[in-house]
Image (tube, rainbow, N blue to C red; front, side, top):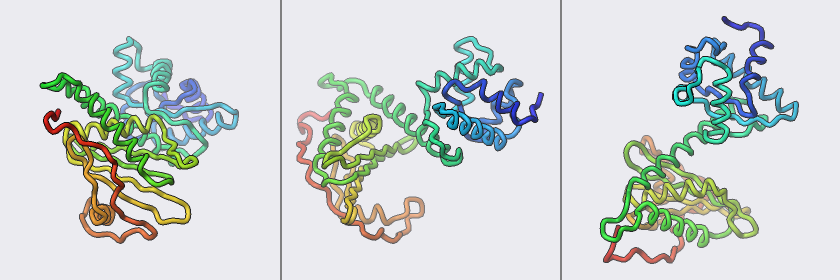
Length: 296
């Protein structure tokens, strides 16, 4: 049965909102849900329009709503495990409630849904990256010669390196990017550190994700790098970085940093440098390398 009355459609949506709404972000996932008779929407654009209307109404009423990524495959698996009928709005509500604590989600802050969607997708990518990196570290197992857990050791070293990078940087807002190449795809983590009276103010979740990806690069000796951009009012931004090496970081020269920032990643062609930016060598981290007689 198809609903055509807008108020009826929105009433159907409200029944499925439990403080969190599970959002079908693309047309592929939307089509997957249309196989259920209880899912009454026929068009993805119309669906998004009504979701946004419900979110705005709830915001005007003072209700807080979290928007979570609704994955039809995960939903089907959830229903199979719990014995729920997937073709009911109550089952979708149960699954959405689970998403609030386990899945990628962002708070609705009044932005247009078109602007919120990329943020939600980015959050999903961040979570998937961290989960994959964590799995890689766990699979490394113990060192054959000393028995130390390789993943845990790499994470501890990555934590020390991150602290040294932040401690040796000049005051200012810092933006760090760590990338680790390898099958099946490149892992990327981003960390923002705002300047708070000369001290870096970082998000603990971002720091955990960043450290985990860096640890994967250190433990697996995969190609990769870490760059940091520091911004201070009234002064040029400073950009420097390191190349990932097994167990440590190798400083990039100012010329290498310049080449990295002024080369198109896809085409390989040179692009113009940014104005008011200094490409420079990084400070000495002052860390001793691992014992050359014993390398994990």
